[in-house]
Figure 1 (cartoon, rainbow, N blue to C red):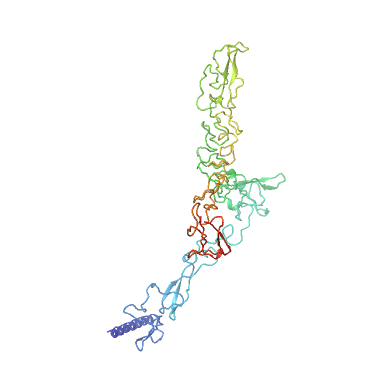
Figure 2: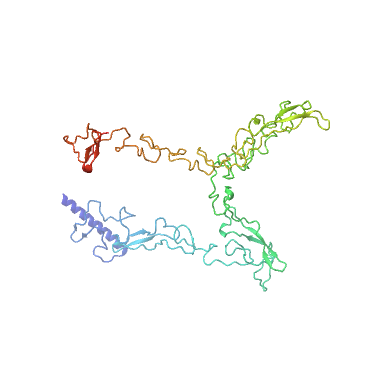
Length: 535
């Protein structure tokens, strides 16, 4: 049965070979080869005269290596030199992946000749980019890096005077050209050609780097042709142009590309509160309602970051809201009009304590009350209280170590002369606050444990790294690495001096003469694997 199957497989294989060969000969007109033009397939060594199969080929049912390939067979080799059927073709491309079909690149074709695939013919793979209007390197860009400033090929065109065009594409029109006021004429003048006037007499101009024009805020302007008294002409000032300027000048991020490099507010300090202002202009970058563009309101805070709190928004008493009404007899200028108990009756010569500041502040130095006397004016007016003499009223708080506004606090935040964070004392303190407003908190003032200086000492043997030096109980444990009074010995003996006991080696140990429970080490101690010590 096995021989019959083998015979059937051989006959089937020979039939397929003859069928393929005849088809190829018919299509190609035949080449006179004995086996109908069959060039051979790798692994199939068939002798058509004897109908035998060599050891190098095994055929099993329909799984034959001689099948005609339609399309691309999985696992088959289509490279140059791979076996194939004569006349077979296969698409090919040897350029980098992703470049086929891009720019000038396209695939070719391999043709089976003499039983193997030949070279990939007709393909175009990436080459060095040249200025020819073609994407030679097949990267999706044409003539990149090889065209002139005007985007064309060849040398940069020369500037032609008088045509109002930037011929050499440097961003400047008719640079270094004379001009004829009233008309655009050839330069130098050509007597044989009539000069026709083409007003206006101004032309575009830009004095920045050509690559910055039209980027960000940068734009070109116009300059006029000016006739001098001696008959010569020159181009006037370039008006209306906007040239590159420093980005974030003064540390302010304005959302514009001022240096015209295609990037906006690069290297600017971060706007932490999102109000459009950064330090140092923003005196509180953690509060979006406090910035140079904010409106000052009466709240005791410098809202617009001009160094003054509540300027222009307080009442005449220096506080918020309406002023109080004058109260007769209390010695205060309640309505802050500069007069105490005005329109109140008094007896001539009578005195009273007076104070024009906010009630309660007179108790806080340097503020203090004064004395006013009931007087009659030289014009015979009714008796009234005179000026408050000797008083010291609250002033605006300044950084001077005094309580100028007499509110019980010295140099409080946002006093005149404070830093950008509002503090008078710009020295950093170990208090969890960025006192010097440099973006760091308690820098140089905390130890390795993260606590305020000084550095703690490793003074207690407790299994913890008390001084944060990544060492635990250094210099505090015994030789066994334990905290005292933990014992440190290999085996306890009541008397280490008993060296004659069975199983003990006391080489190098000598009983301590003053303490029979202790030992001293002798010269031969290093030869012992253990030294027994009682603690």
